Length: 147
Image (cartoon, rainbow, N blue to C red; front, side, top):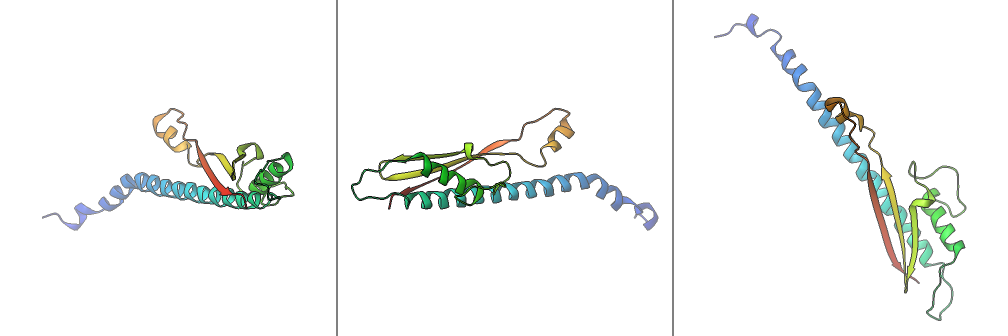
């Protein structure tokens, strides 16, 4: 049977060995939560923009056209949260060039392609010594019938 003096410091050594793995797990979960939050915001933005655009068409002849002013207003709403535009995007690094607005028949579609960049992307490169690109594109689209 081992005595107390022989077990002294074993817990500290075990903690030191396992700490990097627990930190990696914790940071990975935080990054995954951030990605889900960003995607949920993109979904909300594309839905609100499509809803706005579907109400912008006037007339009852059944023929709808999409003009540049409607596209600009919709892109401003998607990026800045206001049809008048702004200086700060709702989501960092989101620009109007990443928003695509289309009209097909009686349906408007707003599609946002956002290049997601993880904050913790340096961690795999730290362990492997190689640069690993963890960036990916989040795509959110919403279609709505013209009112």
